[in-house]
Length: 61
Image (cartoon, rainbow, N blue to C red; front, side, top):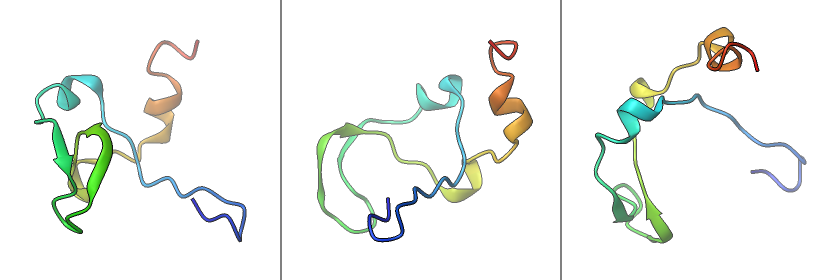
């Protein structure tokens, strides 16, 4: 989130089936900072940018 530009970057999304297979981590593996809450991490290549699929995940509802 860029407060100065008042914008939020969105790099993609990942589906729940893939999320549940990823380990929960408490420390960022790249920058080594602690997460405030447990988190999942994904590589850039795993994130989908198929926005038609995103907006129709539940039949567009």
